[in-house]
Amino acid sequence: MTILFLLVAAAFTYAYSIYNHAKTTFDKEMNINVNSIDQSETKKKIENKEVLNVLVLGVDERADVEGSRSDTIIVMSLNPKDKKLTMVSIPRDTRTTIAGEGTKDKINAAFSFGGPDMAIETVEAFLDIELDYYVEMNMQGLADLVDAIGGITVNNEIEWYDEGFYKKGYHYKKGEIKLDGPKTIGYVRMRHLDPTGDFGRTERQRKVIKAIIDKGMSFATVSKMNDLIDVVGNNMETNMKFSDMKALLANYIDVAKNIESYMVQGTDDRIKGIYYYIVSDEEIKKVHNMVTGKTDKEKSTEEE
Image (cartoon, helix red, strand yellow):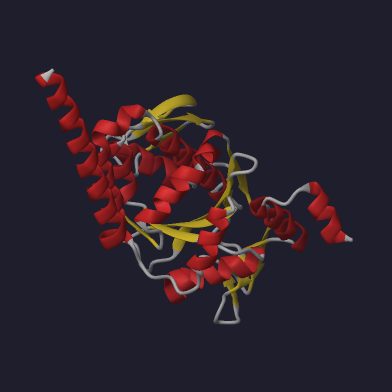
């Protein structure tokens, strides 16, 4: 009986330490103030279990990279009614109006010009949506995150040999492959060897995010929870507080069971010698409906 009591006490102590560690990390290390998002409205949506939209930006902070444009732009739509999570990639070269500037430019320039708030407002105006949370991930920290959860498995659709990130190179075979942290970085960065260029890269980025979510949901990572929290705290910023995360886990956990991905479709163009990705109004409307969770009936009513 004494041994059983000690084991239970140890389990509770460990769980409590993880809880406190997570709370401190979220509220004191990761949390940033974002003026462009009204969190009081977000809380109402959570209470009513409405669709939530999260902007995820991947920012490359390597020393050899100039500037801080957001090369990964993903809107994650959490739909508790349909129990679905939809990830929509917006190509970084998409031409749109930069909020607060009033000029047309590549959408990833917004973060460079005005940080999170300008990036948020630009994406909101582009898709005519409301964003509820903002998450900024340092792409260099992605390697530590993958290693913290013990690696991931993805289905690779093309085969290539990458010499850019390893002294001996790494062979990305076609089919199901296992990735550690450094190999994940090479996997999500490659685009020149992909016949679809940046579009293939954004698809691989979504695959990695899905794999991380799937692995993170498993019980196998519980023993590594403190390491995972440390990695996230060192490499991520968000307007989400610990209380928000608990509310999402309580009300939106089922969306992770059904993950869909999509990339905004457009055409290539050059304006004054600069490459842009042009997205039509029809495509923007389609993506708007996708991330707001509108039904076919609601779509047809709007069209009328």
